[in-house]
Every structure is written in C-alpha cells, then in structure tokens.
Amino acid sequence: MSTKNKSNEIKITRIYDAPVTTVWEAWTDPDQVAKWWGPRGFSITTHSKDLRVGGHWHYTMHGPDGTDYPNKTVYFEVEEYKRLVYDHGANDDQPALFRVTVLFKDLKGKTQMEMTMTLPTAEQAEQTKKFIKEANGNSTWDRLAEYLEKEDSNDDIFVLNRSFEAPIETLFEMWTNPQHLSQWLAPTGVRMETLSGEIKEKETLFYKMTNDIDLTMFGKINYIKISKPEHLQYTNIFCTEDGEVSRHPMLNTWPEVIFSDIKFSSEPDNQTRVTVTWRPYGQVSPEELKAFIDMKSGMNQGWTGSFDKLEKYLK
Image (cartoon, rainbow, N blue to C red; front, side, top):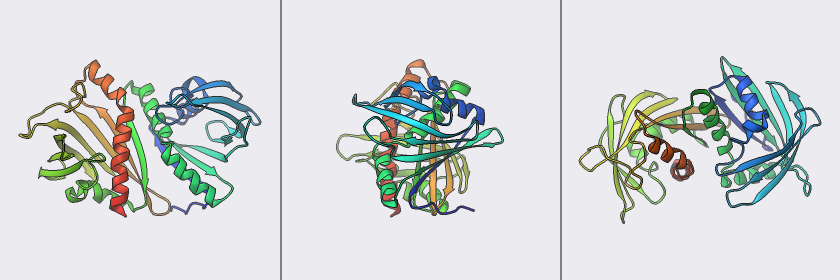
C-alpha cells in the first residue's frame, strides 16, 4: 500500500529494464555517468571520484548555454548494489542543498530505483520541486533509461516521465477517450481534431492538428495493445488529408513510423506517473535514425507542452 510522502521530501521512483549490477555501475562509473547525468542538453566533467563513506565526487556540470555548475558531493553511505546516501549542490562557495538517499532493488532482472531528496523544510521542498520542473531536472532519469537501453540492445529510444495529481484510472481515460485526448495531445499552440476511427486494439484513429495559421498536418494512430489501466502500445504515422502515408511536414528525414509504449503507474498521494517510450519502427535509414536522435530535445519540449496542457485539463 502506498504511503504519503513527508512534506519536506521529494521522492522519485523509476523501474529500469536492466539488472541491479548494471544500473549501479551506470551510477558509479565516471565514464558511464558522463553519458547520461544531468538534464537534457547538459554534460559533465568528473575531476575526481572516491566512492566510499567520507569520499568525494568532484564534478562540473555544463549547461547548454555554456554555464558551468561546480559540484562537490560527499558520500555518507555506500552499500554496493543497494544504497547510496550523499549530499547535493555543495561547492566551494555554498553548503549542500539537500540530502539524497538512493535505493536499488532487484525486480527479477529489472531494477527499481527509489530516490528521496530530503530538505530542511516543506517550503524548501516545494521550491525545489518547482526548480526541478523548470530546469527539466527529471529528464536525467529518462536519459539513464535511454543509456541503459542503448548499452543493452544498441537501440536508440526516447523516454519521458511525468507525474500527475490524479488517479491512474483518470489518466488512462485521458489517453483512451478521443474527446479527452484531443484536448491536450497536440503541442502548445496547436489544436487536435479526431476525424474518424476509435481507440481500440487493432483499430486506427485518424486525426488532424493545426495552428489555424500556417500549419496543418494529419496522422494516424494504430492501436496494438490496450491494457486498462496500465499500458498502451501503438504506432503513429503522418499522412495526407486523404489518409495516404506521408512524411513529417517539417522534417522529411523523420522516421516514417514511431512505436509508442505508454505505461501508467500509481504513486503516493493519489498521483499517477506516465512513462512515454518512443522508438523508430520498421526499416529505418541512417539519416532517419540521426534525425530521431538529434530531435530528442525537441521531442522533450513537445511532450512537455502537451503534458502541461494535460495538467491544466485535469484541473
């Protein structure tokens, strides 16, 4: 049974399709950390790392605008493959901002990562939540999922998680009722209209998106799996007004078919986390794969805008 979070804590839970040992090494090996740590667009340089109680991790995070963020982390607990406790946000000019506890749990070959950030007060926790959201900080853990998949299968995927203040049944309804879906799925500044079809397994939803000025595009969602209230799988293609397969209206090297895997997970405080995983589907050319990889920041921005609309719609 889920329990309520303490008001001065921020909790993040993720399940990765990789063994605990693999996830632990991705966390603790500086060469691997450099491939995923930080929000999208950020990179890091590790200057030194001493993974032991009392040891330090000294690194600099580089922002996409060229700003450097020095960090000096101190480890308080290190239990191999199970637990890390450390501080975050300290450097030569300021003390740590909060304490972090990370638990790694084996789930029959998969790994549950449970992170708790503990702040001095509830007010500081709320401010930090807002900062993390504005800085797209949670994309760090999405990048870890992408890195682990790349290491395991050599497949390039896009992952995005978002938690909503609504029960899982409500979130599932937002995705599987066309009247609800059309209210939020389109990117910011664009509206969606469902033209035909229905949301059922082996059925197709034909839709139109437009900004009513200079952009109109059509697409089809082909539903493969619908398991209420936890799982959706479908493919998405662009098409003409007549329903014929076409290409992305602004990027003709975009993959013709995208496979979407959508998972819904209940969280404490009557919240629901949605996990979106995208991957190119079928035969994909090198140019199409490069376009997919290069567009991850754009995909993140697009989904974030849609999820912001969903958050407002839920309220």
